[in-house]
Length: 254
Image (cartoon, rainbow, N blue to C red; front, side):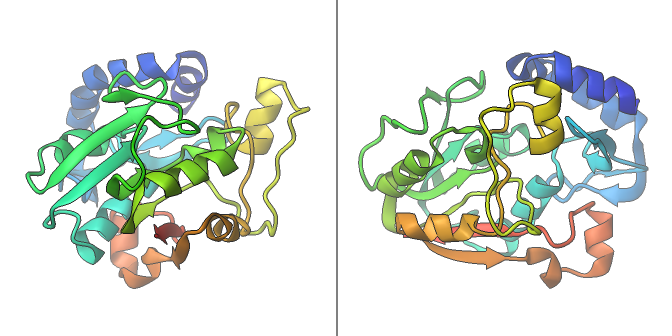
């Protein structure tokens, strides 16, 4: 199964994968049902989660029911337990909307919810993150997760995120990050897809962010809180929810 998932991820374009996943999800959930691990997003439990990854695949990380990964489940728990996202009236902008969140967020009566992406077939507004069609200071909350590592001019993208966020607003800008690196690494001369996947974690990533990511956000004008939320959860729940221990949630404020 591991080899099959790797082949699928590396050969089928992402927009097609998104559409196919709607068919595969209930089938996977049925065959993997159990009580060993739980997806906190929908509360369903399974004997195991699925493997996932473009380069080296990680075992037991992809939820069969919501198709959430470690970062999605961690974000859900943070939003639910530490913010008023599910209760306060907010205007929310969500980049590259994840399936595990899309319907749930859209059904919330307290938020005005807009999704955007350049290619995703499930986004409301097709837009370039470096040239957004939204007014200044439009959104209370911005979710932009695992997007910036795909953007060549991430400085411009961050400036646009800052521009459209309301004063007093906040955002969560998760990225794949190597915390052992002090400095972010990028090299446009590496063009081979396999080599890029090996070095950057995915063939369409343009950099590996280091610890300086947070300071770059600060240089744009954001206040940044580096939240290691797994330290606030029990070891039992970290294992039960299949979370990545030590993953940092970058929470930004304007």
